[in-house]
Length: 342
Ligand code: SF4
Ligand code: SF4
Ligand code: SF4
Image (cartoon, rainbow, N blue to C red):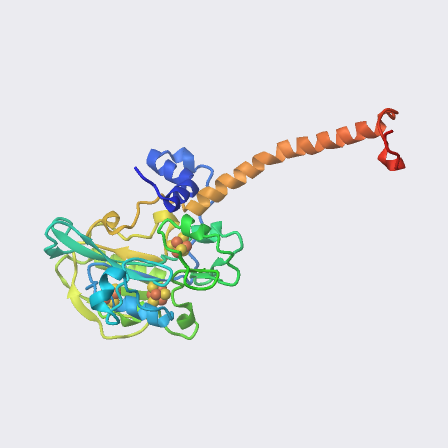
């Protein structure tokens, strides 16, 4: 099996946690520090894959709102020049992308066998983010009030630890600017600061991307899970805190619960889907965040260094004192007197 450098580093950084997941060994998590909790005024998004029609209006709106150019892969450029944003995955200039799961004949939406489903990929604004934990210069920051994870390009030294540490592969390096820079969704913080809402939620025609307080979004997600599959449902659009005409649709047969409640320590972007989350590329993660596990292990190791360091320090003092008290050796030069050996 081949493994590229990014994959190797990612596995190395998350190695302890990933290994523990595979082993299912609760003892492996015993060193984890306590998990961080959702801030009381946490803001987030609910993405319901069953309501998404794959129009990608959210991708274009994201580009416009964040001043990023349309993506044009070389294989599409010949017939598609300048007409459509064709981002195929997250990259240094694409903070949000709609991807598709497909199987067999791809006949039916939201079906695993011979079906297809959409998934929206961007930063999940983790409750206890690895990107913040691994950043050596605190360029990644989690707002203590809203929990939104932002990035300070002036502080960033370009080490890309955040890219390797993120379990969702979100932060991407933009090499098109001098010295490069990391890019990722910051929940349109510049729009939130002016009382607006994220561009992707603002533009979404069906409410598949919905903005609001995380607690209210979770309630909305649970209401959908509790509703009868096939029944009519009025899906809120834009933001849960504003009154917009709703999108009338049908409740799907949801596959699992809500992704992001506990996964990887919890996320402020939550997901609903009719196909399994893993098929949509949302990884199975332990309930502890990688940050909690890694920091817990590190602190234990550092704590373990204290006794040997104290012993070493003591030995240095003893040797120093012994050398000072030792009788003068006439065969050696004494630098304090400035003489040279003859
Ligand atoms: S998804 Fe990745 S980039 Fe976003 S907050 Fe979590 S660890 Fe950081
Ligand atoms: S919140 Fe803003 S930056 Fe994030 S995906 Fe939506 S439009 Fe893009
Ligand atoms: S705008 Fe809404 S419906 Fe269209 S692709 Fe994005 S999330 Fe899906």
